[in-house]
Structures are given as C-alpha cells and as structure tokens.
Image (cartoon, rainbow, N blue to C red; front, side, top):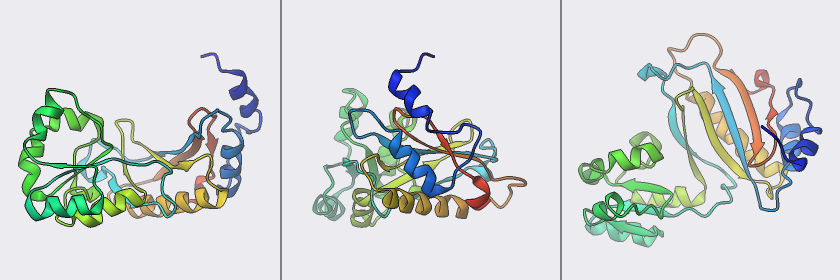
Length: 231
C-alpha cells in the first residue's frame, strides 16, 4: 500500500520498535495528525480474550470526561411519558413502531446511537438484522436499554462511548480529536483503560492486554507500553 508524503513524514517521528508511555504517545499522536480536518484519535486494544466464549465477551460503556469532540444524534424508542422525557433530554429522534418501515425499507440511518426502554425491545428486535451489523442495537450492558432515558441521553451527549470485542478480539474506540490538549486525551485514555481493566473476564488465563495502539484517522500508530497499563 503506497502511503502519502505526509504519512511518511509523520511516521519518521515514531520509533516502530519502541513502546511509549501514555503522555509521550498523546504528544506523538497529535504531532502526526497532519490532515486538513480535525482527525479523530482512536485506541486499538488487542486482547488475549477469545470472543467465541460468551464469558470472555467484553462489552460495556464509559463516559469520557472530556467527551469525544463529536456531536452525536440519538434515536430513542419510547412511548408516553418516556417519549416526552427523551425529547426533554435532547434526543434528536423519538418514536415507536412507526419508525420501523422508515429504517427497514427507506434505509434511514440519520442517527449515531439508539436507546430503547425495555418494553420497546420487542419492536426494536424486528430491526436486529439492520441495526446489529451497524453496531446500533440497544444493549443493557451498554446502558442503552433502560427506563432512565434522561440519564442515557445525557451520558451519550456528554461523551459516552461503547467498547466491545470485534471478531479478531480487538477493541476499537475513539477518545477525542487531534485538537484536544494532550492532558484531555490522556484523561480520556486513562478513563477508558480503567473501564477495560475492570472488564477483564475472570475466566481469562494469561495476558489480557496484548497490545495497545493509539492513532489518528490518517496518521501512523503509536504503540504503548502495556506493562504500565495494568494487565
């Protein structure tokens, strides 16, 4: 794969054979984000888990103290008082059965997160085939199936992110933007890692964190020293 000139120049700042402390990594990832837009800073965590075993599936959510730098559109499936509550909390879209054909047949996906009250999961379940592959299906572990829709919407707007293992047992999550200060990125990163460390499956034997890499949208990866991240 041929890399652009900016990428090649940015990559020279990083020693590929080294691993970095968190503060150094955040400094480097900001320096190597040279695109004309405000790049997203992402963390990629390779774990020692085997996601084929239910007890080693990692899934949860955490509110980043400084947010993600992205404005998030929320869709809430709710009725009656709960629908009114969701609207008051600032959800962009609130509805029930009438939204099914719009999503299923018209391919409407003008939202980033879906929240549902438990009584609406029968309705939302009919959208499993379209929401599931996009990672949009509400889930109690992620706090998106709840009666407390006000808290759910507020948390999401404040910078709540979901983390989960992909098919290759890696977790990919955004922790902010290149325009964030190093201190804010570090805070967000530490908050995420605290949650990931707490989520370590008790049945896992051996190393939990295999590698942790931080990268900007267009920039090269910076590897962190996993021994200092809790394992």
